[in-house]
Image (cartoon, rainbow, N blue to C red; front, side, top):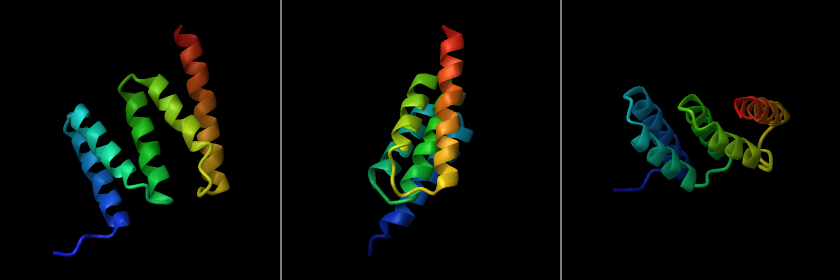
Length: 101
């Protein structure tokens, strides 16, 4: 049986992670996000990492979310609109974490 292209496997991994989130299975969702990210697919990888960052913030791990957004600022294969969104999210999370202390 031929293997699916990495891009397809990465998107399937993202979909699996999002489904697990909806089912309330957080630890399994994180594992699925990480497996999809590990495929290192250009372009799609940033989308998956951003979705994981959103999930982490929503579940109370804003510090981990911030670290992902900071790492996304160094990605070279994203457009300017994405880069602006990443920067905005970094700033928002930094403010949020500062106020939380």
